[in-house]
Amino acid sequence: MGNEAGARIAARLPPRLEGHWVSTGSPYRLVFHSRRAMREVAAWVNGTSGTGCSGFLPAGRSWAPGALYEVLSAKTERDCTAALGFAMHELSLVRVEKHYQALPRPGGRLLEELYLGDIHTEWGERLHYRPTGYQRPLQNAVHHVHPCPACGIIYRADEHHPPILPAQAELPMQLGGSWVSTHCEVRPAVLFLTRYFIFHGSNHTWEGYYYHYSDPLCKQPTFTIYASGHYTQGIPSSKVRGGTELAFKVTQARVTPMDQVTVMMLNSSEPGSCGLTNSWRAGMEQDITPTNGCLALGIKLPHTEYELFKTEQDAKDRSLLFIGERPTDGSSPDRPDKRPTSYQAPLVQCAGASEEFSKYLSLKYLGKQGASGNEALKPLPVAFLLFVALQFLRWD
Image (tube, rainbow, N blue to C red):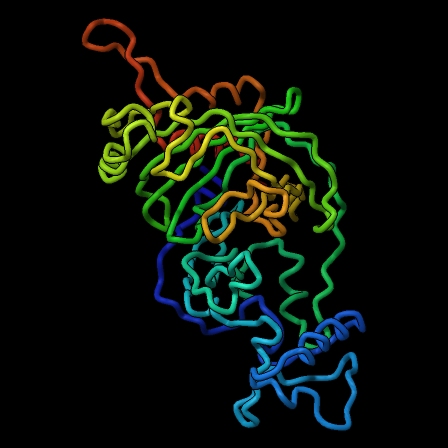
């Protein structure tokens, strides 16, 4: 396809952690860079007892910004990680990917990405949670995407000199148009998917396609969900700077099973809980709105989700859309207090996608002549919509 997505050769590799990855600081020492942060952490530690955190502040010393404090020390048998809510369980699940960034000249640039285990969205669960998904990847400090203004800044940072990233202009939230995943995404509980959204800003309606797979390269489709509804006018987030709070109402949904395992699961679901009983077939879409969703897939209709959105432009001036992170426990952000405070991997805007093109992508079927001579309905291949959308990405 002549772009990064087409040149991506994502391979599941044995983890090789040699070299420098874009991360910074010692995981066992703490440095305060503001008095406010120092006072907050001091209150946590001073209020902790019986956790092996005694002696965190040596006798005769007072808290001071810029000083080094040991969080974990085998020599002194000190462990203040629990008092600080800090855990390294992300290192218990590791994956390395290599692929190539397409260049104007022949060949490509080798890229390496390090995926670490996901972190629970609930603060109180992080000390106990063991990852079943991945965070957004770190990039190898040598083999990284170009341009990457932040990479060198983060790589050269240390405990006393934290990375200060270039300020980015806050863009107005304009959701019109089509947005698509740039790679296979991972969710907790070993879920893999790609996403494609169409937002109609004129009437605040939206459509979304969620393509689910059974493998981390998104090559083996399992089922597709199409959902639609409307959304509210956004307001600036009071918790996350640069974020916009919206409420999304999901009113309709359709499901297309793509493998026999999913077909068997849907056909064995409780009657009346997921479409027509015992009527599911591979590759055939079915409306689940009349049954108020699909219990087997955890879909409830109608329902409202309280979301956090943000738009940015990357170093190549591509428009990015960040949508709030999904709760780790698999639930829905169906209450204002469950609104996300972090983001999923960004979607990229499909450049040049006209309203007619968006409508074309919204079509779920191709007309075919059936045995009776009447026009039969056949689902589009799952990968087709994503493939066409990727053709319109604005790659440099």
